[in-house]
Amino acid sequence: MEWFDATGYELARQVLLRGIAAVYLVAFLSTLAQFPVLLGERGLQPAPAFVRRMGDRLSPTLFRRRYSDRLLLTVAGAGALVAASLVGGLPQLAPSWATMVAFLLIWAGYLSIVDVGQTFYAFGWESLLLEAGFAAAFLGSNDQAPPVIMIVFFRWLVFRLEFGAGMIKIRGDRSWRNLTALYYHHETQPMPGPLSWFFHHLPRWFHRIEVLGNHFAQLVVPFLLFAPQPVASIAAAIVILTQLWLVASGNFAWLNVLTIILAFSAISDPVAHAVIAAMPAHTDHTVTPIWFFVVVVVVGILLLWLSWWPLKNLFARRQLMNASFNRWHLVNAYGAFGSVTKERYEVVIEATDTTDALTAVWREYEFKGKPGDPHRLPRQYAPYHLRLDWLMWFLALGSRNEDWFYRLLQRLLEADPATLRMLRSAPFGSERPAMVRASLYLYRFSSWEQLRHDHVWWVREHVTELVPPVTLTGPPE
Image (cartoon, rainbow, N blue to C red; front, side):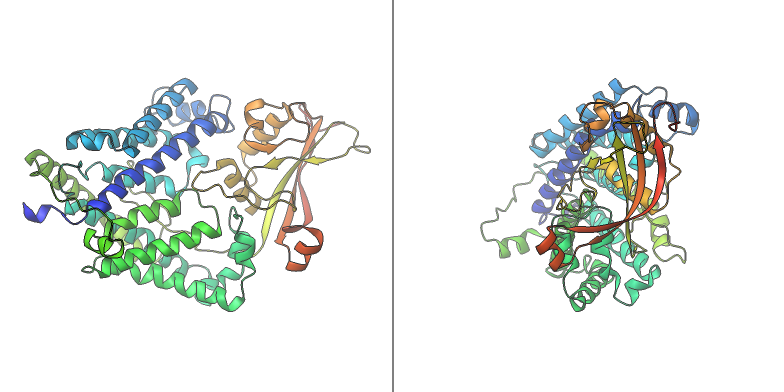
């Protein structure tokens, strides 16, 4: 079974196993901190009501018959512990079945969470993490060579991720074709980072080079992942470098970090050793057990069969973005930013301690990640995912008839402690405000001169009132 063993890819396996597990750890910790507030029994989109409404139509989940916050915390907490053990390499020291069971446990646990996560978990990187976690279960343990079938599958995953995103852009917004997309994107992306202001102010000719580089990295380089070495390793290095550029320029949860981890599937041990001479080599593998061989071949055939739909989607006239073709989130379609917004709008929530509209002084709630106070430099949060902040970005784009948003305003009027912990600051601390309101603002990055003189990173102007002043009992009299 020499053809079955990818003996020169031990580094790739170690990075994949520990890296994917590390992202699962972040995802479970994020769930522990945010899910009860956003989707719990008193959440903004209560999962119990969703479970009852969906009934037998609900996708596979441990919460199919009943949801409770206690069960959710148990699942997420257990998932975090198993993921941490994989990061530490403990199951990998045992026979292959231990690593397989560990990854299938965290995959099933997180699938259960995503399938009741509704709007707050409707992101492409959830499916990406689920697909990667399932495939990682069949990479084997330290005592045997990684199977070539799974190494090739991970490259196919990176191909779909990168090429799908490239095709979405070419077919989508004209600004990607005329190379002007990054005139706007650094400013209007969902959650800018601490360097985004500086990226935005790079020369326009450099932004055009950025777009050209993006097209090369997403439309040409993915094919080279399947080339002989060292070409495949060079292609992986290009993917990694472009993803590091995205990490530096914005906050996209764990999308970029996970892509970097997956790209290591194309880096061979000899190439890594040639670049870093101190890189240890691992060659003392035992013979692959026949049961593991059979399992991996069966799984490989399943993944090959499931690949037909995303393959067809890549070349479809109406290409789907971030779509799952099965209930298990295996072999999905990916893509991002087929359209680029040219202006940035933000929803600003304010509160006052009086119900007298004539004397009211309005003070803002500050979110952790999304822009608010113009004097505040955007923060770096990725790979952690601030789900409420992301949904506020979509809200400003026009999806404003959202029940969760009105529940958020109600929780703020109640000064609900759990909800307030989701924010950076509340104008009256733990005290209840008398009224809250929501307004829409147009935000632009400040100029160099405005930054020097006014010490502001953003310049904003009021556009319209979204929600007029409201109290716990309704509009003020």
